[in-house]
Length: 406
Image 1 (cartoon, rainbow, N blue to C red):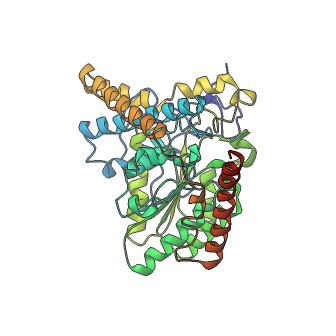
Image 2 (cartoon, rainbow, N blue to C red; image 1 turned 30 degrees about the vertical axis):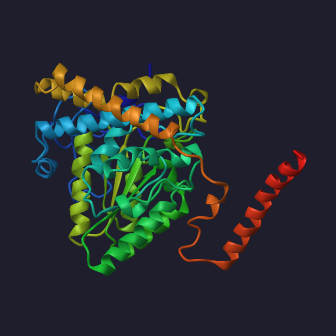
């Protein structure tokens, strides 16, 4: 069986072990701990920032440990609970789609650590611009559970009021949200505030012009924005090595943006690198590009069948790096994974899943004329005329029905 730890960015065999020997490019690490980690000056370094390896072993790090001194046992437990809950939300939403209650759902299975670690680093006044898969980030922002499903059930054009949780509704146009985030960040600078815009996208989006144009503007204006790329190795059915023959993080320094690669299945490392990027942005240091190397364990969406293009061995390799399992192992080694705690976490996750399901099934059907709502921020005579014509058209069916019953 081909081991994931023996492959580089392109899938070529390397005979290496990122968690304890070489990095993903086969080079020797710079520290004995096996966690060679780029500090602020190692722009575009290939080495993965890793604080908890896939065996659940905590590796100290001179630079990044300073950014997580507040993360004690209780905080680790909360991060674990968050990941269990969002995985349960994801499973419930997937089940709802399979049962015909949702038209579509984009699973996040396997990417919990990248989203929870980064999401929990944010301040309330920071603003998130995401793609369609960042449901765990939305959970961190405090989204109403029912609002997560409105679009996917076909009941609304968008899920929530962006200003209520400081997170824009998901962007389906690949990469477009990076431009929105950069523009918002430029506005933050004009306002003299110290909040930060954070945009999430996948490895496939890095080939889009919008993403590259956003980085040009972000670098030119030193905008306080974080480009958080979740490299889950698949752009729908295309492997990342097809479009990126070197680590994606290497691209950003060409725009003048410092970058870092992080183990996207290590929630603690994701928290640390995001805090570093936030501190840089708040202090006037401009943008940062984070490549979180993770894996999409499920389909691209529930309309996709990854068995048609993905090797089962690859899935097995990444399953051994499960973000929840490694944190559970660490907690267990610290004596923090007792039965009372795990039972309580499961009960919380099940209760939230039940709330999600109830919210979905009890969601009121939209009125036909709701399509005219929220098109413009002010009254518009052209739109009003369209709505009037449409209402009279709908009324004609009722009149025809009444005439037929006489």
